[in-house]
Image (cartoon, rainbow over all chains, first blue to last red; front, side, top):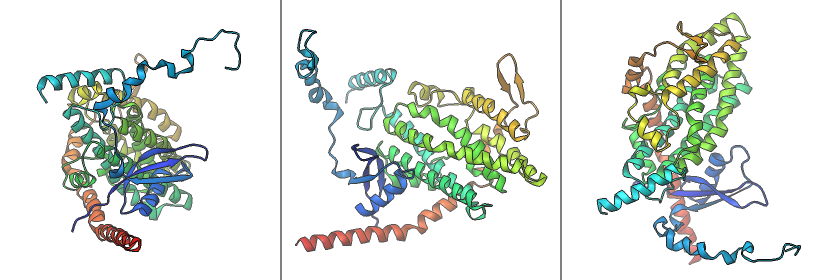
Amino acid sequence: MKKDWPLWEVFVRSKNGLEHRHFGSLHAPDAEMAIKNARDVYTRRKEGVSIWVVESKHIKASNPDDNAEMFDPADDKAYRHPTFYDLPDDVEHM
Amino acid sequence: MSSKEVKNLEAIFDTKIARDEKIEPKDWMPEKYRQTHIRQISQHAHSEIVGMLPEGNWITRAPSLRRKVALLAKVQDEAGHGLYLYSACETLGISREELYDQLHTGKAKYSSIFNYPTLTWADIGAIGWLVDGAAIINQVPLCNTSFGPYARAMVRVCKEESFHQRQGYEIMMTLCNGTKEQKDMAQDALNRWWWPSLMMFGPTDDQSTHTEQSMKWKLKRKTNDELRQQFVDQTVPQADILGLKIPDEDLKYNNDTGHYDFGEIDWSEFWQVVKGHGKCNKERIKARKDAWDNGKWVRDAAMAYSEKQKLKKAKQAG
């Protein structure tokens, strides 16, 4: 029986107060080993204080081919930004 | 997809590259771009992994604890670099197993420099100073390469690499300030590693088959000859500080160009080693393959354990 170790995505919080950020991926037999391997592969120089791992197959990604319909509708919605609104210059704290 | 549609996608792709936008794994890319990247990134990963072997050879014989922890950390970094690069490569749709298989069967290449033997402790110094020095010059431009996962991996690699070169130079410095026998050992290591290090930049520009396309894709930012010249220019003064002599009778500073002129590289030796006839080609691949094959029972046991645990948890949940 040939069974290869699955692929995991590794997320590391570099310090408290910051979010976990994607660092890369690695192969491991299970979640515990994935965290141990991630410690050795991605944090040899104190790059982090917390590690998340998730098996890559559980990530559903949007398709870049759909980017136009996904993200372009925001283009013409300038009214979602504060600078869209006209205020006299002497109004303060706003 | 019709050929007209492909042409259109190619045009969009070329504009993105020209604008210095990154290409990410799920974006459309020409098949040749994908294949070239798989080739280059995997070669790079294999070089890191095989690169552990000549140095690993000296871990148990390091002359002090200080040298030993440094060498251990360096070799561990190389394992890490190999792993960053393998996962970057996998995003292009090739599996880890296929990549290993290509290395073990000789289908994929790795840097020829690792097919030279490490005969004395001074070789560890020379490798750090010269081989890692050359690798850094090759790698720094890759931090800006167009393929996102490769560029990100390279940023991490380059950050970690500079300690490798400094620890090597420190070893050379210590030997050069030591007994005559130690200094001779350092000179002998330089004599043997100098020319292979110059070859690390690859064939001359007029002989390099991939340069033009790779420059277009920003997979390469400078040509082999430009990078080699940069290496010579920065390394010669470092040898002077050590009081060592670069083994090249033609080496001379050229006042007109502001660069060092250097002698002819023995390209027949380069091609011999690339084709598998270097001193250690067979030994390196055998060591690598044995490590993989002999570790199989561990990998299988870990997988079996993980599956058992999953079943147990499922049962408990009932």
